[in-house]
Image 1: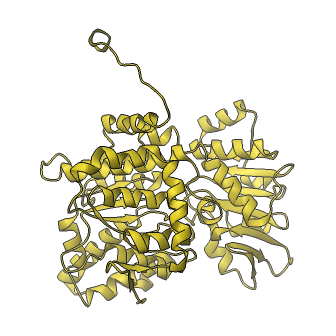
Image 2: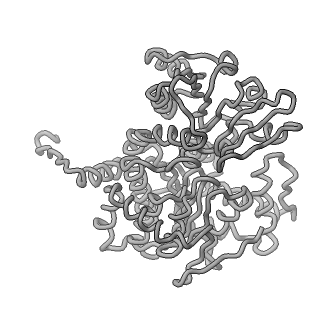
Image 3: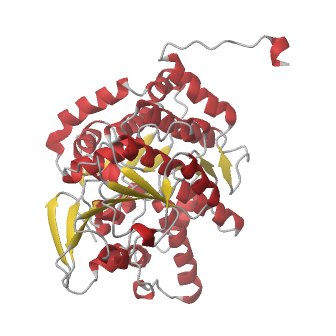
Length: 469
């Protein structure tokens, strides 16, 4: 597909929903800056030396006011940025309006269709004739996936003349991706190879994408270095402190849900699931956990939470929250048909195949009634009973709530992204990083904590040489 691209006064390209919201977006960005000490401190610590001067950074990450602070930190360090979201519902339109006007090329709006979503990724990767970006900031791996699939298709086209066939898959989004690559081969059959040759590396922030990248490393298909910021200590220790609040906010904002007294099923009791279960329990729900892992199940039982199978509780629960991001097909359409009338289903993982949206959308005779943005009641024809699905089965805290609500979460997480990008860029000519997935170096993880502590009035005690030895 082709959409018109607009230009700001600075000649930067953009595509947003409503640029008139820029002033309100700037206000929200300024408020966010005040709550992100580690990230903002990167500007004063590194800004004077302009360490990212000349770097072209593509971001594929939810666009919120907090993300705007990240983008403008990169530009303060000398980089140029082109940005898109990593979820069709997670963009906050006032934030992208301010970014488009003030700081970077951006292509995002809340409520993108899947076709528009992938078009936006294309634009964020398109830096003109000189290839693609030098660096990618990832949060889900879609831009990385597009490059890898593009290179595979270009190699096949060069050797056999065969074009990608969207009809070869029944996955709707993969069909879109293959269509984009097929159409692009007609104009530039080496587009993604040029991107690969220029690309220095990627920083990635989601567990599922990191898991996929480790798999690509193992089978020899990973094309560039990746720094895994998802497993940084300053990420894992603090990222869920208020993600649970955002998920609860998403439930409440979507359908005026009264959680107290309800039966809530949490599918998965890993790190994310624990926090969601705790938030629901605190709100007065009776929580039941669905789990495949015996250790996680034992932890839930020891914390006073009942563990059952989905089949045991599907007809008695009021709320279903999927937290297992690496799984697909957890809640299927057959489960939904057995649920209470108006049971609420939502997802706290970045991907939408944990909930069987395709089965729901293609169910014969079903009705879809949208009564709030991204809040749909799906009614089955034989019973006239239905379920309420939030954010079309995608990430509910970014679809319905504030997305990045916590200074600890966004400040530390996004500062980790800055540290990773600096590390990749500064070491680009040394050979330090091969085509592998690396943990964020410990000294950079600690640097993020130090930057955050400095703005909170904390003073660290320094070891003497004797103690250090």
